[in-house]
Length: 470
Ligand SMILES: [Zn+2]
Image (cartoon, rainbow, N blue to C red; front, side, top):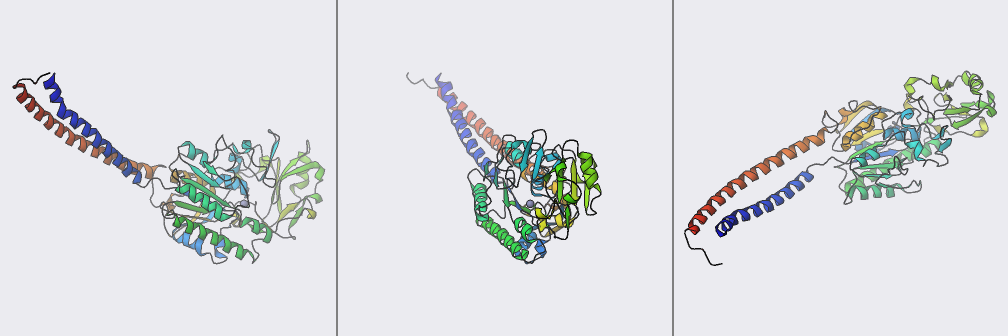
């Protein structure tokens, strides 16, 4: 009926205006919330074999610039064995080697009857990696994007997942190209929140020259220039001040010598065993039925070599409970090398020793909005990095051997929960948003009621008049 129809006109107009204005308002609110400091992104950098004290050997202005703008942890206890693959996997899982399963650079899995070898670049069998889930897998399962430039394991499908962006491992790709890729990924329309950058030096030159060689100074200076390049590129891309950058390594390096060789051939026939992983921590697989014979021959063979049956390996190494750890482990003292005989050759710089030896420890510094500035911390475990990374990324850590509590004092604010900073800003955003919607609705209701009242008056006036035709 016309009067009713006419009576609805003002409220219809009001309703459609309400939805339009509310829609615009909600869009504004959404963009305002997204402009709030979202969980800052994280870039994790590893300079392979960068010993903790290299920054004091020669002038390293870029390392010191980052330290001044962030946090420096002086002693980071990495995991046994202090080799590249076990420690890189610890950094991204928070697990000891026996738990994440990458127990060495050279492995044999007796159940799979398969080998894994960094030397032969035979590292792509997913099964070796899948005792753990690295952080990029979790990050992506929680809806984020990751990008990896050559970090060990990032070109392997683990639990069916590859990083959102990654570079197939190729040692000859220059540092600058790796940085450029990461910056592309951080600044793309669908940016990553987590990047991993790996560089092979100063490990390779440390092995070749030995860490005590004065020529290492130039190698360390070159790494410092590379860090400077990374910082300047991040600044150009307006990322340096807004992302959290962590610079660390997998292990240090110590000096070997031809005067400190332990020759297994002097004690036991090489017909009785196979060497799976090499000096200075040697994984020995005795031939069938030869375990006791090999062990007895080596147990007290040399004062600078400690030989364990697998079950005797000290608990503090967290290096026993894994099928890929071989029945006998021979560990050299710092600076000593275990070879079959002198013709095997050895590396003048090496790592892989007891993880309590300071020379085995890596550099660690962190700068960005989450970190305190110009702060020094004395000690942390490498396993603590993983829960810290999960906290920074706002993702849920998987069970691990690290502790966020142990490292939260390097953060700007102490936050009780792993998602603390994130939920704090979300709560404020939701509260403000709800308040504004309530105010808007109240204003609308007032407007609507007034409009209804006016239309009632119009209806009453019109009802007194003759109806129009039709
Ligand atoms: Zn390494």
